[in-house]
Image (cartoon, rainbow, N blue to C red; front, side):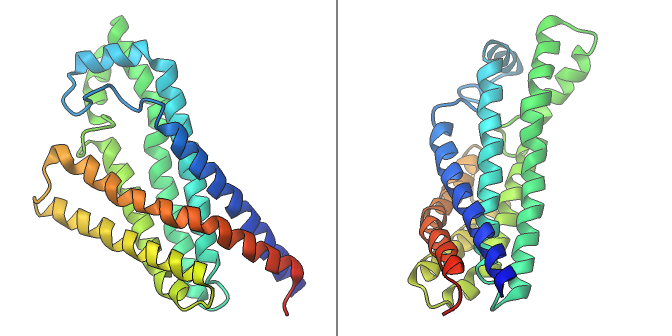
Length: 244
């Protein structure tokens, strides 16, 4: 029991600070540009010129996104851990889906920091790799919803939504009201995101509006992130106090 309490305390403390970092990096992201203005309709020439002129800021923005994504994964993994005692299979599956989502997110965000600025520089300087860069840059467009880049991003959010749905019922069955609140928010996010995906696949959402629709569903995650601050702190305190 002592080992379990120590593990529970460490996980809850780590998840608490992940929530803090997640909220902080989300706020910071509003002040950092993730793409050229009017990114959906921007030409390759406009994108290259902007990326070369704002290379440092662009990299910083996506490094912040990496930190935000890792923190969010930590929060969702921490939420899944809350049901481990009563629903170990759901907790394990939820954590596994979060891990898959983290990898799906990490690939494009690393590309944004590493590959995209190099592609823009190759095109701008007329390097011997210019032709290859001209072919790759549109494929790795960070705004167009059907690029290879955004496909990885939306896959990550979809895996998050599945993880949310897996732990929704176990959270609702817990006695703590904060756990029930998080359960409701997780369920709403899971259903909303999948509804958006279905609407996109059926053609009810225009291509230019896909990004906004996805982000609208994703912003629901702010509710469980904020609520989890209280859940993780309470759980960590109970672990230190020990079982009653």
